[in-house]
Image 1: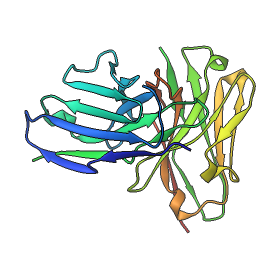
Image 2: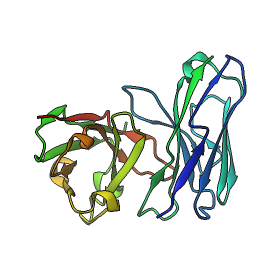
Image 3: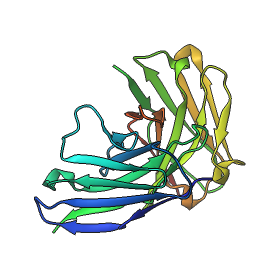
Length: 108
Length: 117
């Protein structure tokens, strides 16, 4: 099974700061990676698919990059409504999926 | 529009089973796999398995292999996830989601399952 790691596990930043989260796969997954935002009491929201494509309607301050085993998710200017936990998720073979452990983002 | 509507919250005793439903609308039910994902208390998102509504076959994460069954009723466009031998560690919000690949934007609202004696 493909394992996913994320770092950091949590971070605290100021409004307007640039925030970066990294995600690493245990084997090459090409660009088969999603990024989600998850807020308490809500379903996860897809932000980025295929590692770098912005989902329709998602603000452009969110972006993703990477391929193979190393991926990065960036919020260019942190906003109060971005407080959430962010997860990466691989879909390399469509028969087995794995989420990263999550990164909790807070406002300093 | 695509909607996935799940059944309501459940409270179960340890050792019991729970069956959660997910009713799909706004698309052809048999055209897309349905996945189940859970978030246990204080934990992250965890994929449990997938079910193909057309063929009726399924695949499960190894962790749940021996106690989860995913089924469907195509006549009412509804998928089911049954988890048995419940323990307190299964207290979680369970989500159904259509597709976990590049089109993973359709999720149910979540169903809270509480396991308590």
